Length: 172
Image 1 (cartoon, one colour):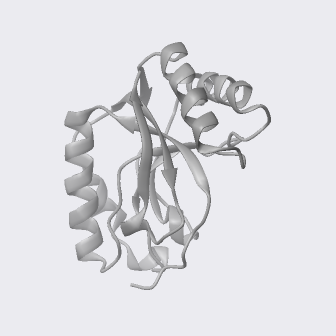
Image 2 (image 1 turned 135 degrees about the vertical axis):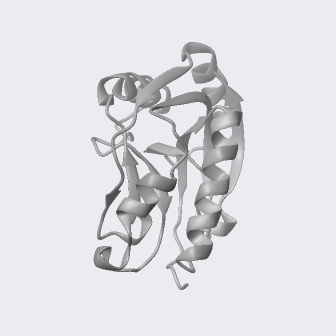
């Protein structure tokens, strides 16, 4: 599967370990089935400005102390035309996630957070939505109605998804 290389640093919210394990296995199996690349389960919050890495670490440490763990409702799976959001689980409670964004924007000194479309990606690829069996994906999904966000991370996306690296991670 050929996916274009991405670039930049982003802020991710990471699920609790038990959920992360379930979603990692699910994403891996789905990626194998559709012959695409596997990746770490995450919710992307924002980009990161071009500031020195020690400042990023300092600001993320501060954020991890200010933010609390969060549970967000998940909708049913959707298919999208973008390769990096092909099959997703939309997050229902954007108001709570936006509370995170306001704090991230303040810590990073600008408007870097996404405006909308918060979600947990399940599949990246170039397939057409008609080629993807969403009902099977929905039925095979781990039975998780609320995503338990337990960590904040900064990820380096200067690679393809299978090589994305978390460079900073803190518990909330």
